Amino acid sequence: FLFKVLITIMTVTGPSAASSFLIYSIQVVIIYFLTLGIGTAHVSSMVVAALLRLVTRHAFFATNHGCAFNRLQVSAAFSATKTFYYELGGISLFLNTFGWEIVGITLAWIMSRNERHRSLWRIYGLYQLLEALSSCISVSVLRRHLMVWDIYA
Image 1 (cartoon, rainbow, N blue to C red):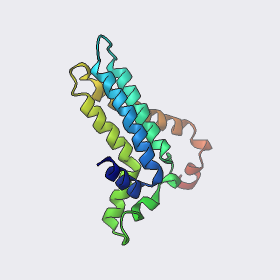
Image 2: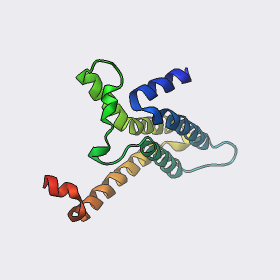
Image 3: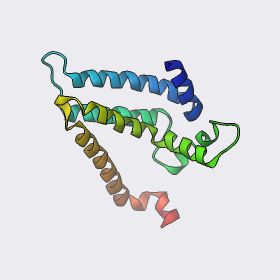
Image 4: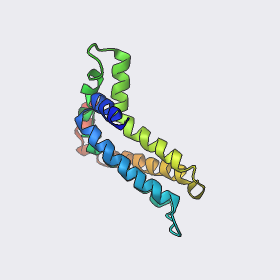
């Protein structure tokens, strides 16, 4: 089963995603064991959400993605079939670009079902919000130094 999943991921997203998915899975399993709180150890929801957010963000960059238009992996839209279909190409490109975020949000929701970590979902969302807000603030402050503003403004 795992081999078929890895082949599917590699076909749709490229060769580096399968190994990144394996490493991501191992890291998420370790984080999940932290949420269980085996024995007397208890890890706060803030730490678990931060770890999950960092692992998800690392998986995004480990698969050669980036936060720029020219870093979109457009070839993902053409890799699933021999004939190009607009809908399937768009879905493939969307999943290639935002797939790690979707997986991270889903895992945060699953882990928040644990009695000890009910607030994990909200804290994970707060970390995403803070990341987006800090990105917007830094773009606003550094807008004179970014070439994008010369093109679009």
